[in-house]
Image 1 (tube, rainbow, N blue to C red):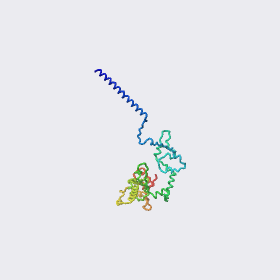
Image 2 (tube, one colour):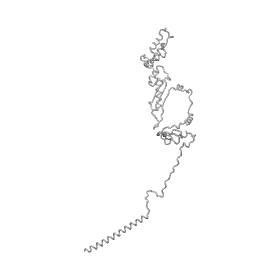
Image 3 (spheres, helix red, strand yellow):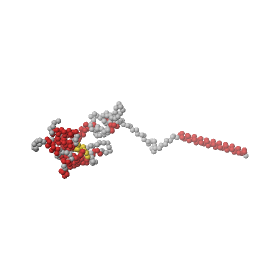
Image 4 (cartoon, rainbow, N blue to C red):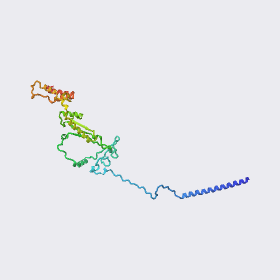
Length: 331
């Protein structure tokens, strides 16, 4: 029994080794065949494009054109500058034939040149307003002008015929809107001597205008800025002047019943001071109207200034001189 068992084990061992040997030989043959096939074929490229290599176009090569020299190097010396720079525009260094420099640099270094200079481009320039360009524009506007009126050759004649002076301001700025709120303001100036008044109307007119009248220059100034448009403010200023002028000639019923104590200011002509001064200078003389002496205008003016303006060094000194002159007393 033991002998039989040993024979069977030996046969099994021999059969397993052969099978293993056959299997390994077969695997080696397959691997060598696969390597031979890969060696014969080329490496395949993965193409993700829809077109093939043959239909692909070659990339175009763009050639840069040569840079042209600045324009000012090609311009003639007798070039018409108004045709090159006809209107306001930003500074262009290639056009302007001037060696301009502007900008801050370190100490001892020259300012930056005009090329790539932001300082020259930021500021406004007046290269379009050269004398030849202005002369050319004036010649073009002459056909729309009329001759200067006769009789207005001097400033005095203009002020005599046109006593009212109107002032307004136009603003030029870099904003989204061209309108400026200050442009609506209108200033009206007129000399008080150009208006015809009597004593009552002048006093009432000065009280109506108040601080708008400057006694040092004798000019009345009316400023109108209530309305949104300049034309409306101009009409309003003219209305104020017209209304104040005509209102000053209106005499109310209660004004005729005013006494000397009710007057707004002191007047030498209607006061008893005139009678007292004339009585002093005519004292001891026969009473005759033809030979009666009157107080001069200087004395009357000094008395009015002393009472209306108050006592000060100038008014007191002026009053002293007029009293000595009136009494013929030498210093």
